[in-house]
Every structure is written in C-alpha cells, then in structure tokens.
Length: 83
Image (cartoon, rainbow, N blue to C red; front, side, top):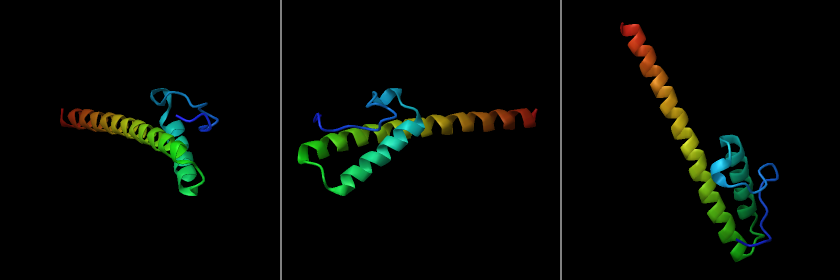
C-alpha cells in the first residue's frame, strides 16, 4: 500500500478485523469519497480499493452476525410462546 494513503483518523488505519461496524462503515464511506474524487494515483487507488473491499466484507460480517442474533432471539421467543 502506498505511504501516501491515510485512512480514517478515528481508526488510525487499524486492522479491519478490529473495527466495529460503525468504524468500518465510516472508513468505507471515506474510501468511496476519495476514490470518487479521482485525485488519487493509480497505486493509491488500488490501495483504496483493497481497503474498501476489506471494509465492506467487515461490515457484511457484522450485519450477518446481527441478523443471526435477531433470528435466534425470534426463534427463542416463538418457542417460548408455543410452550
């Protein structure tokens, strides 16, 4: 990754797997804005793309986990209501 790339100040470029959903989403939005500006070099754009892909996957993992927890809670409630 190019040394010119800096990411969200609140995460300090932390490893993606350590970010909360909110942190990953905020940084992903920042990455998208920087890419849309078109001001980055090709090398920086590739680094941004790679970071963005990792951030998007992290957000998806958080959402999948939240969905599973909600489904489990709903199933538990249904079992309780049926007994």
